[in-house]
Length: 142
Figure: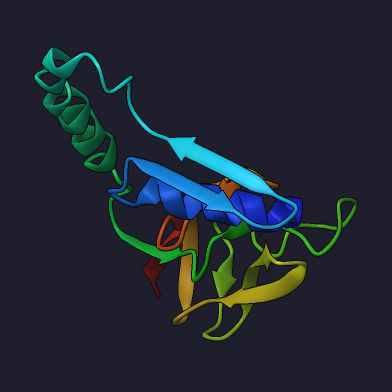
């Protein structure tokens, strides 16, 4: 497996409700787990607390409409490290205009504006690994 495939698998596992994952092939073995060891069952009582902590973390989702990640991958604000970003806060963009790139499996995918809008906030850092559906940019129509 490539590093990108491993990162994508890890991101999907992290976003899932599964608590363990074991993958073995002829030349490769990977084991992932979430939470604490299985022995402390009383830890199941505090587990709702982290779940509640996750909900508030999700609750402060950006107010307004967001362009979300169409896939698991790496967010890029520009076409190259030394290039200007596709958009900046305050930019007016047209429907279909490229606003960022997502890299997955060594393939670059353009993310386009869903409508004529104004970019209000860039929610991800350049090079960040993002999950499917995670907000990338906040915008208002106009």
